[in-house]
Length: 261
Figure 1: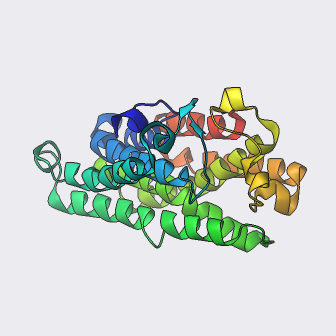
Figure 2: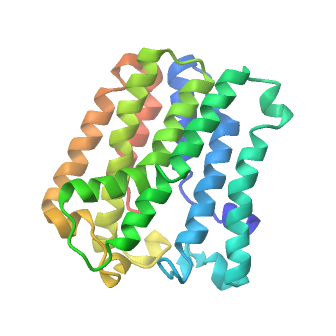
């Protein structure tokens, strides 16, 4: 569990939670317990995604994947424990003593929905079942917005909730998050074509090797890049409500659109 959780990575999800809270109240620290929980859920998903029964990857964040390091059975258990412990942590005193019960419940619901059968798991299932098949654009966007976008959306919304966001503010955050979530996966698809293993810290070309549907394979590389830029521009437009406090959200969106790992 520690090996995978502290292996590095961009920490984009807790960063988004922090930036969302900062946009609402000027204090991003309210998001920390929720950002940590979401990163635990994300790490579990990576461990399971790398398994031989899934993507069968040997490298993650420049290091041997969990099942390569510790064996498949231990990797499965490590993922299971990270998922369960994420929710246990959110019921601890450092959370319950700081936030109203209704906010904690709303945040736990957002994370649960994002991680479960209506979110990340649904996207992963479509990803597996679509290998070797041709997907149309709506089906591909369903895959991306669930497999990757759902947890990004939960990161932004829980950050906002932790800081006391109003309904109008949550609506703006949700629209921002939906675009950043889809953009993040399109960028991943592009990097799988144009990136290199050393920079990415994981094998490139694996999507093509598994005959997976990606944005470049469905609409072409040029159109994928155009759509990525469009989504980042739209995402940043939805931060106008927050004025200067929305700058960290804008910077993260811009990073997502231009990242090389």
